[in-house]
Length: 249
Image 1 (cartoon, helix red, strand yellow):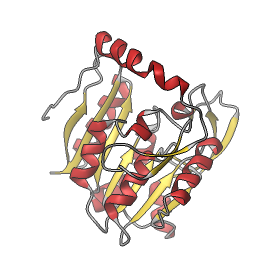
Image 2 (cartoon, helix red, strand yellow; image 1 turned 30 degrees about the vertical axis):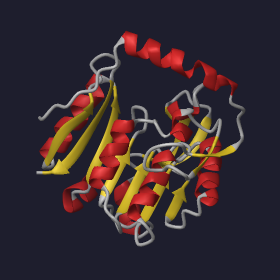
Image 3 (cartoon, one colour; image 1 turned 135 degrees about the horizontal axis):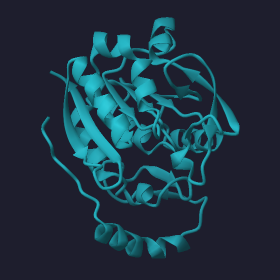
Image 4 (cartoon, one colour; image 1 turned 120 degrees about the vertical axis):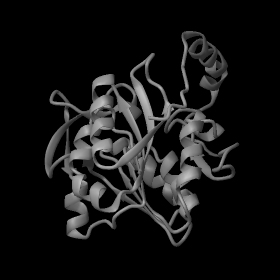
């Protein structure tokens, strides 16, 4: 496995918090231009997610992976779309001939996601208000204190519809992707199991965020078994949050 690591030390995290302190004064609910990065000039609603989104600095390594792996006209799945930053980035990169499916189950995030799609006239985006998992059904969803960290959990108070990617593709509701981003706060293995046929038949490129070393190792082993080569974008040794690029060998 080729390793290109990004380490987040306590010192780096402290400096990051200090830099962000003045941003707490920025009022929520304003539509502002994104200031830097590939989405520069596109519009963002303050308060919908971290300030890094409208600053354009949000997860720069992941942004670079999107720019490296997505081509005009591609079909992209954004699984765990949150408020839509990477949905918008995929929309811009794929262009009018592309299609972006944004999967998000949390109503609060769906609202911002749809508003971001509308205000940016991202006509190639389709929002699917579901939680991608290993099967079709209903699951409990924990909304958490941070809307970006909601996840499927037995103690969750919100009921959400679940679907597997294999079932969605088989039914014709979505087209097989060329690229997938998966960031689902610990349910990554369920997403992969529910896409076994899709992944082994179509081998889309992938940006996978995993949460916890055990899940990370199991996801990597499964992808390697299915013919993928893996490269670290973010090494989660310090905090258990990993990001890898997966491409067919």
